[in-house]
Image (tube, rainbow, N blue to C red; front, side, top):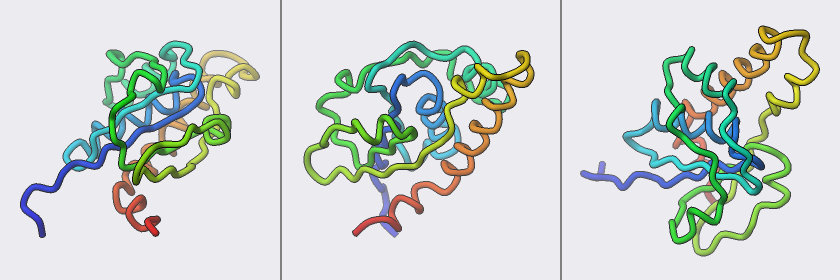
Length: 150
């Protein structure tokens, strides 16, 4: 066992950096902050989703201080892994220099599902389900990333 292992720099990328990537960053910081240095960004950022903030707070994770940011704002950071959490980000994912490994783990889009909801409680159920799916994924880190290495 090494003495001080450097934290893995992991970027969670989605289209808007409003919901799923923010949840993933929040969970990673909350559950795995000792081994992962998490970041999140979007390809077309459009603001932090208030429902994402609300359901994360229900689970004891405060992401209210996060802000939606464009991938370009993180230029110059050498990520170990980029995890795309939506299909659009995966399809439009830019090439990352060096040894960065890109992994796709798709999650449903709560804002899109919430548009069909019959009221706020049903809308929030979509957010809670995806929040919990993301938590389960984050709980498996970093081992699940390392297993995927060539």
